[in-house]
Image 1: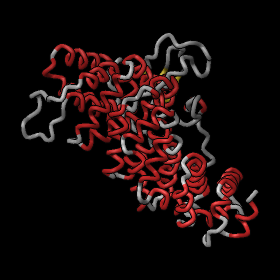
Image 2: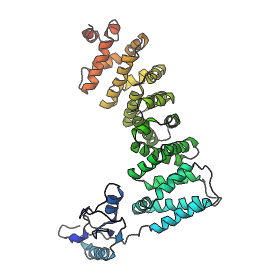
Image 3: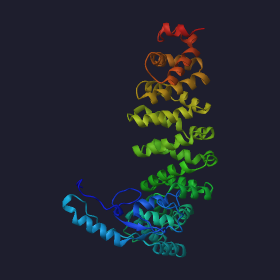
Image 4: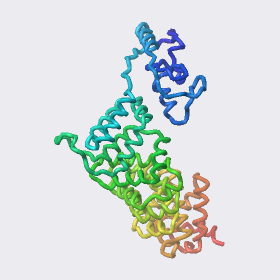
Length: 415
């Protein structure tokens, strides 16, 4: 747009200060661009008019056709100056249509798949449709179908359409498409008292539909971030078994990162660390670390391994694995400051709580002592350097006669 063109101020959305493409009025009479005011209202945190600060009596949005036509005409007149033409927006879905679909599916179970497929199509059309679906009570209905655990599909699809989805899998795909707000997701999790997470775990266990697994994993990750601490602590062992299995299957880089994020979030609790260890988490992470070249994934795996080594069971599994100590040692000074910090933290936990004579000797043979000594001489994080110093001080006597340990440095730490 040329700098000489002055945009009429009433063409601008009060929220974004950009030309409105789909102007709508709210209950206070102020007009906004649909996308901006929907995000404002349906964030679940604001129930007032951005301009007047008055509370909204309802969340209905009324299209301002007169203003839209004026804006379109102005854009057409100034197109030669580089003003972008604004097409007539497709109207969003009517709430009554959503209500009819939900009612139809509720009263006719054999029509549930058909109705869910239609809801998914509506959600895929626009962000406005997704917000209307969410505000129309569709989330509760769809979540209930996910919870139903129905693994059978109705006969409403033609035989040639493949693959057929079960009702809970189709419902899950609609929930994924909706990208529901944190407030609505939290309501589902809280109301169902853990049953929703169990339902997602059940879908993960099927392994017959990669798309449904991906949707369940993504939604599970979002769910864990809105769950309360007591809910996180009470996670069942089956969830950890599935997460570790997905790590081992190496389905995709995205799936690996999602699982690692979930484990990092879950394993802040000591109880969950033990569950993850018992599910084989330590071995799975070590096996992945051996061949991993992705910097971010390596960092995340070391964070998980550090958490798991915060319990005795985790340290025992690390030491039992043939490549455990070696792969952690290898990552020191190889990835990033964060990677080195996590690797040194793991070594510190092992040195402090699980250091048998064999383990102490293995640390020398693997070059751990040499790397720790180098850390003390280079520019690195203060906490990392301090932990390296503590490790050397703890075992300076045992390493004093080793040809692999720097004599001058080990001697300086002997009491």
